[in-house]
Image (cartoon, rainbow, N blue to C red; front, side, top):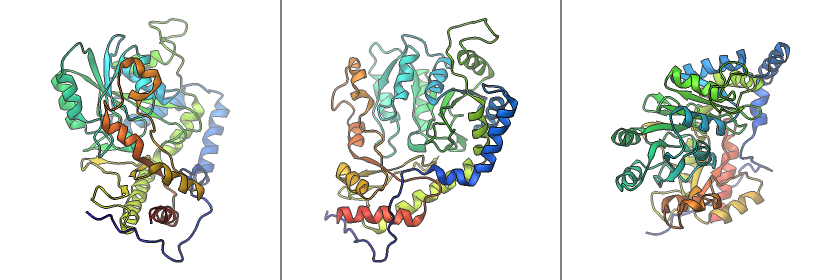
Length: 395
C-alpha cells in the first residue's frame, strides 16, 4: 500500500503565536463572578474544612452520576485509596489494573496493602482489555486477585460489559478509576455508577476542576460511604474516637464551592470537547494525515459505540512522535505524552518482575501517543493551525 498523500498547508491560514494544550483563563473569564461569589460565601461562613459546601457537592455528584453515595476527599489519589479500601481490598490481596495510566492507579493499590497485577490494553481505546484480563486469571497459579481497577482513560469508559462478565466469573469487585471521566457514559450509565466504587480527580487540569487539589469517590451503598467518611477523617466518626486507622483526607470547603459552580456546566463543556474532537478528526482526514492504513502517519482516537467519550484528552498515535512534538513545540503548540513509561516498566515496580516486551501493546502506545490541544474554548482556527503544522512536518 502506498503512503497517504499529505496535503500542504492552505494559503491564507491563520497563524497563531501559540496554541496551549490547555487554557483555563478562558473558562475563568466566563464564570469569574460566580466563582468569586462562591469563595466569598465560604470566607464569610468561616467553615473551611468539610461542612455544608462539601455535603452539598456530594449530594449533587451522587445525583449526577447515579451512584449510591459520594464522599469528598483531598485528592484523586486519596479517592482511589479510599475506594479500594471501602470496596474491601486488604493487605495481601492482588488487584488487576492497566499499566497504561497515571502512577496513582497503581500506587493506590500499594497504599491499600495490595499488589498490582498489570494486564495489557486494547490497542484501539487504550483501556484495559477484558480478554487479556480473563486470560491472566485463567492461568491460575497463586493469584489472590480480589478486584479489577479499570481506568477510563482520556475520558472514555473501559469496556464495562466484558469486564463485568469477567468479574462475575471470578467473583471480583470492580473499582473504577474515573479520574479523567466525569460525565462519561457507558451505555446509559455514567462513570462512577458502574462498579462497587469509583474515584474522581478534580485536579486543575481535569474536565471538572478545582482551584487546587480535591477528589471524590462514589460508592454503591451507604455502608461503604460511612466507612469512607471515617477513613478520610483519621478513621474517626466522632471527634477523638477512632474506630480504625485512617488518614487526613478531608476536602476543603473552597474547593467544594468552586466545584459546585462548575458542575452545572460540565455537560456543555463535555459536549464542546466532543465537538472539538470531531473537528480534529475531520481536519486530520482532510489533510491526508489519517487513513485506515497502517502506514498513515497519524491514527485517530477510537470511541467504542457503547461509550460517550468526554475527551479529557484528544490523543492520537503519531509516527515519529518525538520529532513531531519537537516541531510543534517550536511553533508554541502545546502537546503532551500520556504516558511515556508504562507502569510495569517504572523502576519502583521492578520487584514485580515485569520485563520489556511483557505487555507489548502498552509499550507501543507509550512510544506513539501524543495529546493535542483540547479544551472547550479551543477555536477551530487554532485547531486548523495545529493540523496544518502537523501536515507541514510530515510533508
